Image (tube, rainbow, N blue to C red; front, side):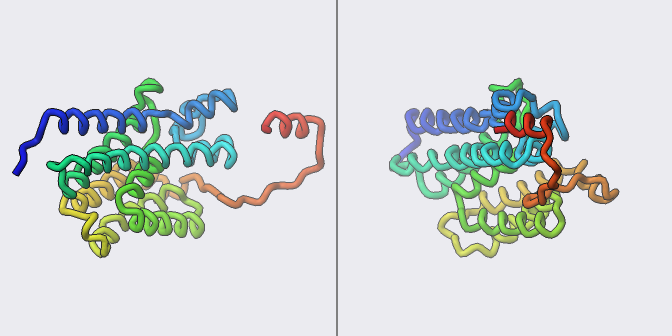
Length: 236
């Protein structure tokens, strides 16, 4: 059995550092400051993520934030696949390194080096990373999240329930070639972490004080005024 080489260690380490740097791209902070003149971390829930962007600045601001956060997680784990061309790196090694890259990317989102180590919860980045490992499971979890959101209008509740479904979908998944013991353990860890990071949300849900989010909220029609016209122009 060939022994691990310094070059392999160097490549794997570099990719994990790159995963953290990708996760550190503070899309919500940069978009909020550049196009809306606000630091999203000082508004609403003070969370640099898609949900807070939607509540504070609207769908037009939230959509690119979600896309970029999803993409940076997806890319962070996908680049690990290049190590398959190293003869001493097996399939289990690839999966383990992808899991490590996922944690690095999410850590970067929560503690971004490019934004004073003040980021978001990393849910969109996590979804993107899981999609890069096992797309079918990510799609099922997204479906659960969307269904809960449509029925209850609570993003946090959707995230918690989808996270708890993650290990269940992992255990019943037919993609045995892409899932090893490490990934199964990882799925349970993620479920626990999502519950832990949403402790405040759970308290607000129990007391019925959690904010609701409406994806297709009907616009309120009002007679056009000079002030409204000015605001509409500035939002374009």
